Image 1 (cartoon, rainbow, N blue to C red):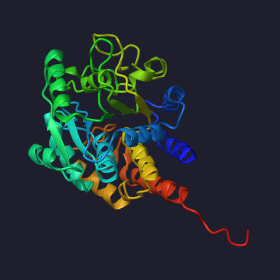
Image 2: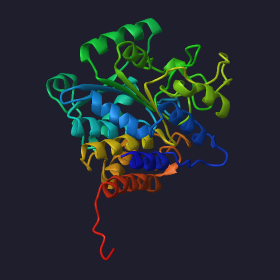
Image 3: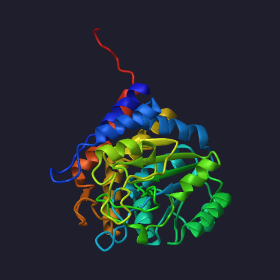
Image 4: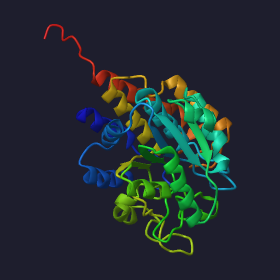
Length: 339
């Protein structure tokens, strides 16, 4: 699996950005995260999930990124990746998934999860039935109230892992930033505190990000500040930069956060010998359509176009096809005729 993990990492770190957009930094972020992990990032995350999560266990996924007024209920990057990981956790490991986000994001996430063939249910059914998912809105509040509710939810659900997928993490001054360095704290739920609380309790934490303002990328913030525009000094009055301080046990630096999540799912498929955990091309297409129909916005153009992080949907879907081929072919023996 080590070779396969390397190939998956290489695929999900291919940078596809317009020339007038932030680009040229993914390789540096990946190298920093890889140096810390000493292993393929997607494979390490998958191995840790397999070690910690079993049948009936709960996993909390944090996702959703809103920037009103143009991205009022969320972008496509994040929910799609969360749905893919939820497939691996429920169908592969037999666990259940609680998703946390802003209340505005809940319908979008639920639509995306249903499109991903997931059992998306209410809280009561979720608690009584394994292999289900439930999405819960987290209120905007003070730090103290957010931390209190965080402790209560962790006590209630006893998760074996907390995963952040394209989820804003606060900087050293407690401010949340957009990818361009603007303050987004007033509309961002402080659910990154789930990572801090989980780490205090020795619960596995995984962060997946593609810039440096996402929860989990704090593990490599020194490099983020060097190579990402506005990471050391932002455009808001705090002046402390967009680089998050929130660290996770495993940090998956990737070209698009969704793709990093898909990579983890693919590696779990290989580890569990269940090749259908990663969604099919047809299901992926449906996930994108349903996400957009529910209000999902392309995070690069800020339009509800058939793009994910600026990449045309049909091109983006090709990653899924290649990932499935890498794992299926990589774990197959062929008959060497005449050799």
